[in-house]
Length: 240
Image 1: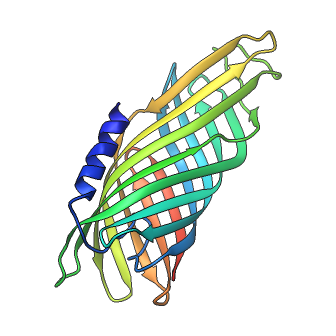
Image 2: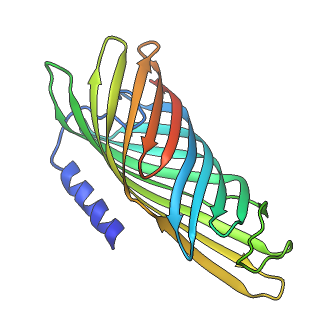
């Protein structure tokens, strides 16, 4: 219900604006843009039956297209891995597997004279990493080398982005709200299962970044997210 309320609010706001769109990790969009993106999630503190720290490396191809002068849609597809470091002492490492996401952007305000912009964006991202292995042993949980562990990651993000262009680069940043859920299930040899849902310790955070124009069609970007998570992102974008 909370996710539906957020999505409904975003679409309500988007319906009232018309201007050029700018994405969270993208330079200004004039047409179809494609690119590549590397996200390094170094620290995402979660709470389930116990606390856990999650980290992930995500390699993605991106595409964004302005459907109107005000609104653009974004698609992502690639591969992502995951490490779950549980407070009891167990660490599970999962191989990279298929990941995908989607999003929508809109410009809320633009100062034509000075170039200031305020954008609103909504993102969805999910993946179920591949084969996992246990690299740590817990003193507090049952442990077996033969047990199987699976996990999936689902994330919604809502953000406001404030940006200011300069000669050949644009600085940007703003607040974000993220709702992450990781459902973990382990199956023991006897068939017993343990299911745990991890949720964020904190939902609100900040992000900041820079878009650098290499030429009118090609740009690169660097970004950091902090407080609710520690994530570093970099990407390259080509606009047709």
